[in-house]
Length: 359
Image (tube, rainbow, N blue to C red):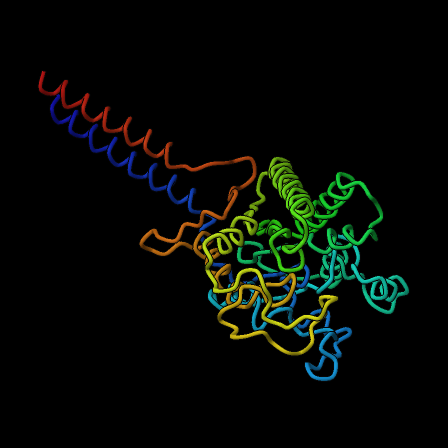
């Protein structure tokens, strides 16, 4: 009987270790390095995208031509790809909205067939039209979009004056692109919400009421985006979507004065907000490159935050508080409580066998 109890204890112990290992591995399924990144979005992600179509930029003679990049160096996705040693297919276009381009002249070129459609939907359609081949397990698809939809809305040039209609349309466009990519085999996504546009230099000098309205509009968008992602996860059991909170990330940099200047711009701007070709000071002191876009150092810091959660350090450090959710399909939360429950059950079972043996 004693030998039987000892054998049973070994069986239970082995079973518990295996189950806990499997659960821990499952919970870390999203903490990984990807070999390939396919990016879509606007000027916060674009590097050479729009300029490859239109680029005529010279800091002296034409400082407001189309730049190669809307910052003073690389953008976040380039830092992330370099950190991982991943290939990067960057389809982002400066000025892109969720559907179409915010510049009416550029959109007219797209509508005439002189250019492809450059909004998020158009970027994804163009990507799919090439019949791309990719390893679905090793490819991360990223989407960061929406700021230009609101800039156009703020200028009174949007197709609607109702912010709820605007946001609903944006959600439809984002859902359409995710579903289209999923149909091609994509199932690993990183989607980034919008930063607080009320705090960027282009808006932070406006009235308190205007700033509050801008912030509220972005918050409504971010809430809708989280709901849209939850709906996508419920609809597709094998889809993995990480939602990164750029609103919280950039707000924290401002609130903690992470840079000497968190309200002004590195590039000198004229009264219309256009770049003059001159700079206002030392690049290291500034958080913002121009009225909307952050400096490359901010992009690098954001890539660090992304990497910290997508692939934490081996010592367990680096888990980012800027991820709203990181789940697959209809699963949510952490496996840790379940692991603890399993281990507790196993320990109780082993203890029970020990008591029976002593009795």
